[in-house]
Amino acid sequence: MTWQLLFTEQYNKRAAKFLKRHPDVQAQYAKTLELLALNPHHPSLRLHGLSGRLEGLQSISINLKYRVTIEMIITDTEIVLINVGDHDAVY
Image (cartoon, rainbow, N blue to C red; front, top):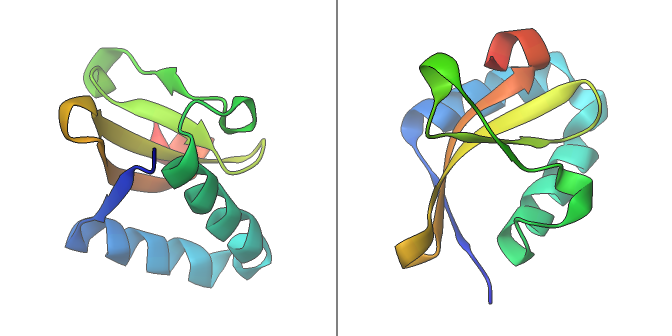
């Protein structure tokens, strides 16, 4: 089963800014999104739920330093991308 990734306008702006500042991770970022669409539970994504003010969202890892927060709408097999950045910026 393939999941549909939903890119909001706000996310696209954040992602463009992130990739402009960190062009060295562009390939890893693309691979992460590709894997997310194929299998959001793949171990290398390190999918985990968030708590506190981000409760209800999940996080995946681009690498050890950078994260993407997501909202998984499981009933429609959709994944809404929320934010991308380093650990402190995303959380």
